[in-house]
Image (cartoon, rainbow, N blue to C red; front, side, top):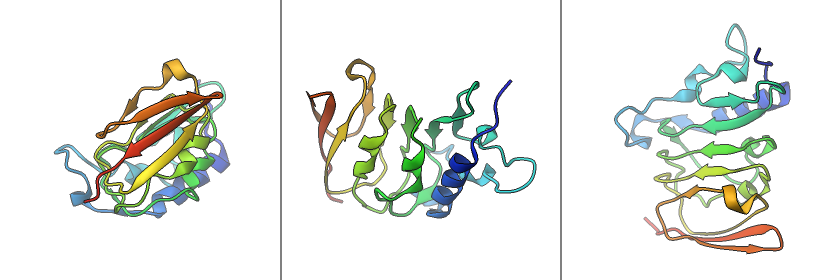
Length: 165
């Protein structure tokens, strides 16, 4: 039986949701839809483990996956985003949204349990130097640019060149 999500994780997800606007033109995929529209603070659908795009550990109820690909999200993000409070996160997919040419938040590197990250077609800009402390053999990184990855003292050092729009 699925455990309900933790209140602090539900709150972090709702705050993340409210930091963006929904704009159909922010996603290019034809089947795009705003997954966050199913995220409710009150009522029957308040358990974040039942929300579109959210995966929870069945035993603990912790959020371990966030898939907001093609979710029509528009807006900037940074390392103070509440998304980075999800310390049990293993999979993060933010592909095909429009992050308004903000830089990839370096706080992604603090998600030490992350094994999968997809930021393709997300309209980030600039260059990002990210450090990840993760399992080196289990980190499929999907991105539309050439990525230089170096493992140093248990941390992934990534140099991700992102072309300016």
